[in-house]
Every structure is written in structure tokens, then in C-alpha cells.
Length: 446
Image (cartoon, rainbow, N blue to C red):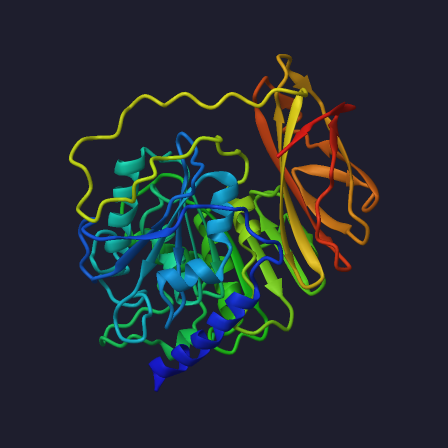
């Protein structure tokens, strides 16, 4: 009955995930989800699906996207917008699938909660290593995200492999180690019901003891939770914040608080910018079946700050045999030069839902001169009003808007890019501006 309760809750989540998809049609793409077998050590018999977009960065990032109980990698692929974000920004998405009864991930066994101990985390790390070897990815851009059971696994992966994962986004999860059992059970009722509370130091020690001797940097973490979560109760959100702030040596007092949309309270710890060490979004009145804002996770990771080249990777599907024995080339292939016409280029991606949206903007200086201080001007479509933004200041909130650089991103060398963005409300029009000017000069729009 205990396992059944999360299965029932997660089954409803699948419906909510589909409902939370973008209202915009995704860009045309020939890329498809491919299953990979023989990817390496796989103690828990996970399946691996891989999404490689048509246009790939020369040194692409990797996102591990982990499904909920009763789900699968293909279901998470089709029910969320991470693959569409990969199309926009040229990174690779790994979708693991749990194959045990109930299709939940192991976030409870002693093996799963120890670095290199076995079970699902080791299988997922084999998937990451496979992609790194085959595609020559950027080791400094490896991230994880997930919902429910997948959010718990996100906490586990970042806890066990802080030297691999640079950031994570956990939607409706629990802290690392909260779900631990010692009797072989796959369900921890006390944790699920929000009855396990610890001090920040105790939560942090659970993670530190899982990888003894590690003294390096800890991954940044973005946390999402609904106040009406009936499956993994809301107190788990507070306990996650305790754990990750402690791991970063931070106070429990936020350094920044805002309301990115009605009913959402966002707190940041250790910084006020869009990539603070810990960012937490509390969703008032939202149940376990929460909407998944993929664009906000990609923004937090920084995977939206580069535009993929126009040329794509090899069109052949990944092999079903093991990874190649030869190492990837150590030299980076040449990048595609920026398009001609204009001294700047702007990429603009919209993620919309109900009456809200986020816009991720990439500004590239395509001139031969360094820009020192910039303003980006554009006209918002009718009915859109900015409620909050990151990496720039915005004024006014609607109509003809000017975004001004922050103190840390005002200098753009030739061919350099920076990513900014905002959250807005809308009255039905979720389109994007048709024109942009940077310091008064018209930009090419992609």
C-alpha cells in the first residue's frame, strides 16, 4: 500500500506534465529520441534514452532528466519541454528509465546513498560517461533535473557526484537521505509525510558522509514545491533548503525574495542574481502534480546562454553497443561564424502557461568592437507585462521596454554573448517582439 500511494500520485503527475507543455509549436526538427544499450556498468538494469538535437554546440552541455514513479524516459521526454529547450540551445538530454516494479528510482537503499555504492546512481553515471566519451561534451556543463521520484534522484546525484554535476533543479522532491530505509522497503512514510526534520548541519553531514574527503565546490540547486503537495508533503521543501544552504555554507535567511508570478514566492540564498547557489520557488495552493517550467531550469543552469551553430551533428543514430574505446578529440572543432548583417544578434525563447510566461534572451555582440555598457530595446506584444527579471533591469514593464545591463555583464567582447530574461503575465498573446536594438543599433533576430 505504501508503494501504491506514490504510484497513484505519480500517475496523476503524468497528466499534469502533459498539460504543462508549451503553448507554442516547437521548432521543426528531425532529431528523435533514441534508445542506447550497452552504455556501461548498469547494476540496476536501467534503460537509457538519448536526445541529441539537430544543431549541437561544439562542446555541448548534458542534462539528465529523471522521470516520476510509473513514468519512463520516453514519457518524460514527451511530457516536458527539455528536448525543445535542447533544440533551442544545443545541449544533449539523457532520459533514464527505472524498470523495477512501480518504476520509481532507488533513492532509499544504502547502496544508492553512497558514492560508487551501486544501484541507480551508478547506472546513471555510466550514461553520463557514455555521452561524454562519444560527443566530447563540456565537463563543466553537466546538470540534472527531475520530478517527484526524479527530483529525489536529482538530490541524490548532486549529493554523490558534486564533482560531475554543476547544478540541479528538483520539482517536488525531498532532501538527500530523507527517504533512506534499511529494511529493504522502497517507501519511507515519515519522509513522505514531512515528519523528518533535522538541523542544517545534520542534513549537510548526510551528504558529506556519502562522499568522505570531498572538499570541492558543491552544485547549485533550484527547488520547486507546492504548498498543497499531498504525496511528498511541503515541509520537505524547507528541509531541502536547509540541506543545500548548509552545503554551501550559507545562512537560512534569503538574500533575495520576489514573486515571479501570482502565488509563487522565490527566495535566493548566497546571491541575488539568477544563478544564486540556492534558489527555491514555493507554489501556493499547488498539489504534487505541479507544472514543470523547463525554461526556468535551463535559465538557472545557464544552458540558455549560447546559441547552437547552424550545422548539426552526424545524422546517424548512436550505436547500441558500448562506448568507443578511443578517447574523444582533445581539440575543439571550429565554431560557426555569426551571421552577417548588424552589429548584434538576439535569440529569444518563450515558455508560456495559462496567464504567465518566461522569456530567455541571448544577446551576442557580432561587431568587431567591444561593447562597454549596453541597453537592449524592444516592444512587448500587447497584453504582456513584466513582473520580474534576471541579469538585467527592465523599464517600463510593458510596451516599449529597455533592458539595461547588470554590473557584472556590461562588457561584451566581439562575438561574446550574455543571457538575460524575465517573467511576465499575458492576456492570451504569447508572441515575441519582432525587433531589437542594442545601443540603438538594429540586431539580427534568431
